[in-house]
Image (cartoon, rainbow, N blue to C red):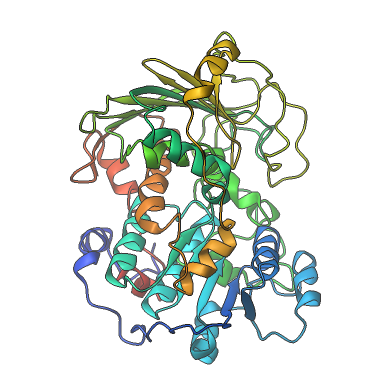
Length: 472
């Protein structure tokens, strides 16, 4: 904080008014390329190891993209080598700002496969330069950063945006849409969402009173650049390579990781918007640094037109299973659900997924692209003749983004849709972090129950030199 030339009050004021700010000199929009038949999208990739590498391979497999730049703060570390071998002649950068400065004119679109907290500056710079953006879920770490990303996307409407909740282009998306339009899914009053597999921080000591001690920084890693706009931390191996997800300062825990794959279609097609209240019902192992060993949260959404109020209850933790309704059926793993990011999925007591309760029907669903079924089985057989035809997906999530860049399709998870969903997770994380009930005004977008929680919507001021990204 002592190194930052912004006072908290000044930063809070500027952040809340950022949507009215002018574009920062040097980051003016360069214009969006108009594609012709046979063109491919020139894609620059920020984050090339671990999940970032998987994203690159998926984009390349579509046959619709040229990989024109690789950018990573830990270039040539072991987890980046496979991508570097696959694209040996592609220009390499450690700093995304230098990448845009040196070869920006060659870039049509950007994939962002970095830790949650670092999505924001890359995305903001790309949008202002007129580059289409695909960013992994959740969109950003703080509520305000998501708000600014939505504002930027609205200001530059020719820029295509897509959040990486891949199931939004698979069978679950088209089924939920068709069933909602046909009136099969209606009058929903309650949703139970659950992810009960082991997480990276499970087994850590929740009685800690400080961050872990400093360790030697790997030779390949630019630690200062890794931290980006955040307040400074000493390097430790439990901050990098997926471990960032464990910490409030860097990641969004199980909710931000899996909520985007479980709640996404219900949030969009039930038009839930933002909750007016988020209550922590269970926070086992709560501390000020990393996520609880198990969490139960209650999100309450108001009535929307003729749609009744909805409560979503989120359950995570190995032994924190939700109540299972009679007639639920098989609880084992669904092969359509990918494993968690920390390795092969282990036998679980319950599928990651959701149970949707309406006034007349109950639906059982999984995660990602897994489709819904009506339970119990007898009710499903009775309803079968009335179920509508469901469109097959014309493109997976990666091809959908690239085709949207070329004007052939519309992105299915643009920031206008993914932003409010990501903000739901931000509010849930505030309840986990503070341990308090969050009372929220969805219209004014402020927390009314706690000054501290309201300030956490924005978070601390950025480090010196990173302020420009908070201006739209």
